[in-house]
Image (cartoon, rainbow, N blue to C red):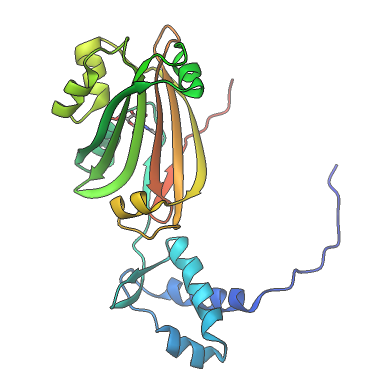
Length: 244
Ligand code: 16G
């Protein structure tokens, strides 16, 4: 049943009218074009600076505009489309025409919390490796990734990921292990000062956080990973097909 509710149009806040005006302007300009300053827009649109600022901030957060310190606000480049696949970052980047690289930020052996232990099907307090890496495509930071793997299952893993930038390659070559399926989640979060610095953005800017819980062919969990991507730069694509 479809309810036909005769709804009144919601009242539009002033800043949203400014935003709509700016969106129309953005659609006519190529990426990299300078947009008028806050001061000019305030005068042109006969509104307050706070209102203009709110509209501009939302468009920056959505990846339609970029702010360059001390220079101005510009029309953003189109977002990068990233396919959600059961492949590694390295393979995914290559398929999209980028060259992947990795910066190891931190790698420690620690005791599994209850949550991580449950994810990896090990006892709480058992040893896990926590590996934090910055993932880059053509030298541009794309994501900050924190991976948990069982230390008993993958002894000496940290030494190997120091030498090889692809975790999946290490899993295949050294441990004869291949993730074959995964549960993947996507949620939003605000960038922490650390993520913001690593990904060249502002603290509090919108992020897309991907969680991957991957399993081998026997159904044993392999890794529990969180990847933080800039929400203004990426669009994730999942190919869906009818069937079971
Ligand atoms: C992806 C996976 C991550 C995996 C990594 C391996 C997501 C959210 N994450 O980034 O779970 O550990 O690829 O990539 O898709 P690598 O072999 O290049 O290190």
